[in-house]
Every structure is written in structure tokens, then in C-alpha cells.
Image (cartoon, rainbow, N blue to C red; front, side, top):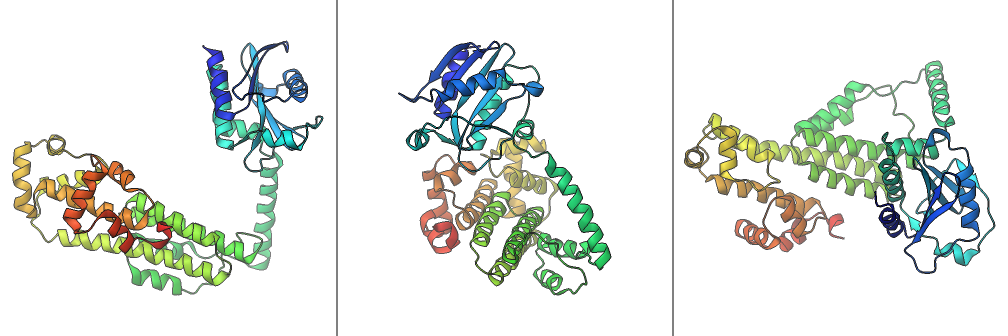
Length: 402
């Protein structure tokens, strides 16, 4: 293995120093891609502490220094790698703590700020390249960041809450009401969804936060998430469902009062139900045409491969038919050519993505298998009479246009 290249890679990714020590604590290599970036004498003190500390379970270790910045020790079979200093972009609780002489505020400003996920991925890269038994992110975080008392506290809180609710006769809302609520969305049934909201029951919603507003925001996030999954089960394209969910959740976070949070939460449910309803109406309309087994299978293939470049030959091969026969049979049953049908269904998805997502025109073209943004633009204008930009400006959800 070219370990020098590996050290260079890590240094460039994290913008910090990478050191390799022998198991006896002798510095073998040091690399830093940043010109004149130093951490001495603290760096040597921390390195000496790390390489000589008891490496329980022989796993990577994050060490917080003065609760301001951190180093990482990555044990290999015949050496130790030390990466740092670095700072996390947001607060991370670290089990292992140390103090060292301060190098001053000006030096601290030069310590790179890194995303937790990036640091973890680089640490796992070094460790797993040097060990037969690989570890994953959960094992690394459990060893370094998770308070071992948390699970015990959770179990105690659960037991206490269960006992208190039993003593006071408190129960949660019935599960069957929840089933009716989200089944209504899955079926696109607006009337049943409204009825599910009007049901009366003696139970109550669990407490999801310590303050009423935060509780309703968290409840809204749960409801929007469940509604999006129900809509996907009802046939809504996942990308549409996820993008719409992102928008509603971001708006929920911006709410300053409980009525606004409740309004957004319920509005999201009806929005998803309406989208499913429209999809079902489209499918019902297609059922009025002549039904042919091969054509139904053909359409199933098309709907499940709309994100790809679909070739008639591929469909025919999947169905065990001759491509020319399928091309002639399709318009007899559907009153539209097979290639035009594929394009029509792709354009429908383009319209949905223009309305409910922030994807660029180029990303949409790639996502749906068009050869280029220009190709998509020409086909879209031919089908709708307006450009991609005009359609998004006219019909796009305003939150996505910011």
C-alpha cells in the first residue's frame, strides 16, 4: 500500500496534519498539504499522549483538546496514524478529553472546520485499509461519542412514563385512527381524510418536546414524513414526495406559533392526498381503453423504467415479443405510438419535478434519461407549448423558486 499517498489524500481532504508513528511512539512520517500550518508544541504532546494511551478494543479514538479542537488516533497493525488538529462544524460530544497549553485565538482560527461525516469517512478509510475486520460508522461513533448512560436513562424514563400513564389513566390515540388517516392519503380519498381528522377519541398524542411549539413542530415533521410515504405507496413518484416533504418540513421549522404549524401539517396531508387522487384518476381514464395483456405489461415496464433511456427493443425483449409486433400492437390498443407514449409519460414527470422540486433543468434531463437539457427543452415545448422556465415560473411551488 502507498501510505504516503494515503496521508496526502487525508491531509488534502481535511486540510490538516497527518502523522504516522511506530508502535513504540517514534514519528515515521509527517505530511501537511497546507503551507506553514503548525501545531507545535501541542501537536507533539497530543501525539505522545495518544500513542501511549490504552487503546481499548484497538479502535480509532477522537480526542477533544481543551474542548476547542480535536485529534484522531487511527491504529494500524504495525503503526498509529494521528490526524489533526481539526474542529467539527457543529458540536459533537467526545468521550475522550485532554487539556494542553493554548496556542492562542489567532492560531485557533486557522484550525480547519470539518463536517463530521467527512472526518468519519476518512478515519474509516485508514482503519479499514489496514485491518481484515472492518468497522462501520455506528461502531466508531459508539466508541467515541455516545454516552453509555443514555440507553439506561431511556429505559428508566420509559418505565416511569408507562407507570405514570397507567396510574393517571392516560392513553394514546388509537392506532386504527392513524391507519384510516394515512390509508386515506394512500388512496387519494380526500373525504375520508377529512373524516379521520374529525374523529373524536379519549386518548392523546404523546409529548414530543418540552415546549408546546416544539412539540407541534415535531408532530408536524412526523405527520409530513408518514404522509409522504403513504403517497409513495399510492403511486406518487418518490422524488416528488421527498421534495415536497423537504419543503413542508423547512416551513414547519420557520413557524412561530402553533396554529401555523397545525395548518401546514394538515395542508401537507391534503396536498399529498390530492396528488394521489390525480394519479388514480389518470389511471382510471386509461382503463376505459381496450385492455391487452401485453400492452399492460409493456406499460408496467415503462412506468418502472421512466428514469432510464427506454428502448422499444428492451421492452420487447423483456416481454418476449418481436419489437416490430409490439410497435404495431401498441397504437391499436392505446391510440398512440409506443415512443410517443413513453415521451408523454416522461413529460408528466418533468412537469411534476418543475412544480415540486429545486432540480435544475439539466439535472431533470439527466434524471429522466434525456440526452441533454436542450433535447428535453425541445420535447417539452413541443408537448406543452411553453418552455421549461415558463412552466416553472407559472406553476412552480413558490418555496422551490427561492
